[in-house]
Amino acid sequence: MSLKKTLLAAATILSLGATTANAMPVGEMSPQIMYPHDPCVAGGPTAADNAAAARLNNVLTGKLRNAMTGYRVSCARIVLDTVRDSGLGQRAEVIAITTTIVESLLENINEELDHDSLGLFQQRAHYGTRAQRLNPVWSTNAFLDEMLRTHPDGEWRTDPIGDVCQKTQRSAHPDRYAKEVADAQRIVAELSSEPIPKTVSIYGALADGRLTYSTINSANGNRTKTLVSSDNLGFTPKAMATLNFNTVLVTSPAGVLHRVDIITNNNSLHFNPPVAINGGWTHSMLTYDGYGHLYGIAGSTLMSYVVSRPKPSDVHIGQRAVIDTGFTMRTLTATGDDWLLGVTTTGVLRSYRINADNTWAGATLGEKWAGIDEVVSPGGGLYYGKTREGGLYWYVDRNPYDLNGSDLVGHSNDPVDASGWTQILLSAQPFNTA
Image 1: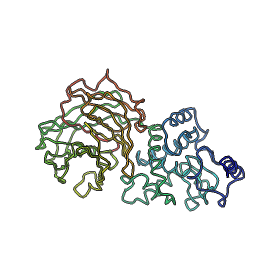
Image 2: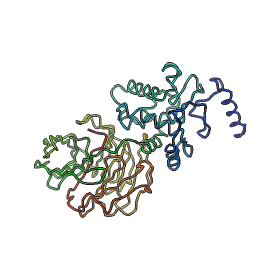
Image 3: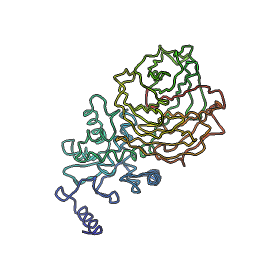
Image 4: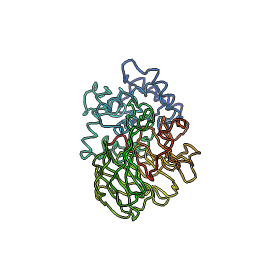
């Protein structure tokens, strides 16, 4: 049958009301066709939804490429609002949006096109009544409940997002979810209504082994505090990654990974003696993405690890995977869940998405970063770059997940500090850790 006849036949089926016998899974359907659906929000899409759809159509690359509509944005918006109300954080938002892209093309489908499935998550009859499954708030909460039930030990926080979606949904097509994760992250970034947390926390290391702790107002780039420890690590650290507010990882020149437990960073900075975790850590760079994933570069080889505890021992850092070689970087930081940012040895700012199968995609965000020796990010599209002269400058990336630098704004005339940052290493605490 020709494509034209196929589309006409599909339209005829939909106009008559599709049945299980002649329907196909929604994941196989065309995103260019709107299927029978209920509104997701009262009053329908807004002008802001339509504008967001236009922007997303410039960056989406998966099933919804050039197919985002104000209606689909309105559905994504109610899903995200519901996840935020649950308090599960941004990773759960990305998981939920990934699932709805695959299951319903972000439409609140009101016909049983695939067996007895309905709604944004294509939940079957055993989930609840028809009215419940077509209620975006109810169905999103039901999805989250199932996600937590199928991941009783909290693996959803660290397992690849595509795997989390599959374990929750138990689809006959498990490979579909991972392909849409990047677009889900772009949608979450575009529709994020949460204000960036006010305080950015940055740990640093001095050449003599002392640590520093600085805070920055994220809204205006003003440094609000810097503390220098009297405690000493006992060595000059080679690489550094902040896991959370009171836990930092550092490596020694001998290649031993240590955990540093911060006692206080309120009015003074004190920490316990470093706890040796393991040897063999010859990495020149380390960074933690805040979602259970530690990344490091040794030579030019990029590697990843899973960190399963807030204060890990040797058994809590594992699942080492080699991403690729050829990462000749001067500095590396994480900007979100499996997203990295770095400056190459030739002064190019690069953004990288690391996929669940350890493949990656990268893009150049800027060419003139030769003066930046260190870059750190707490997430939220905020980047801080330290110059070799000791200045710290701040940047805002409107969509940190679009592999595009056209929306990256610098504040060269309003630095955090024009000088004074003498640390040999810097590491920002990810926003979503405590």
